[in-house]
Image (cartoon, rainbow, N blue to C red):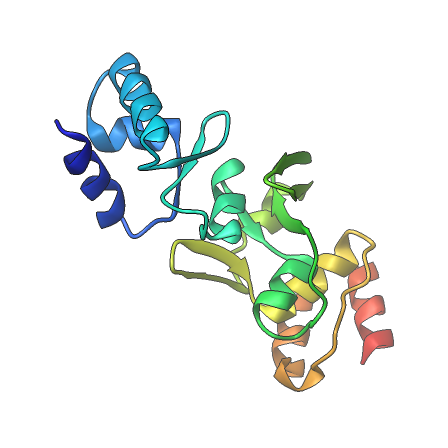
Length: 185
């Protein structure tokens, strides 16, 4: 397989970032062959090495997609999701996500922070959107997740939030979250 064929396979996925394991699976080769091919492609600047085991097709990779890749399963939440949806206008060099374990990793000046959620709540998919290779909390779930972990959500554009959806989702969270929600409303 040529580098052009390998690159086409990566581009055809529609993704902007890959793990070594993703690439090996896509190229259907041995781990050693994939490692050698990746090294050569990085040297020729056909792909970019972001960190050990993580690669991108260009410098314009999707940091949210990378966040979903580092810890899987996970979904983007908190202020990162609120910024993504246009609820918060405050940028940050920290991408926050919810997963099944707490973890932190820094790649290319961006810190990826994960908060561990109880399995029963994490696997309740209400309020999580899936599009463009991303799993991301809808604004209402991001607000409730923030309350769940004792964080304050940055809300600059309250008009984009559905109060009914907030109330509907709040029944899945502990009562302390509902009390915080009442104070917000």
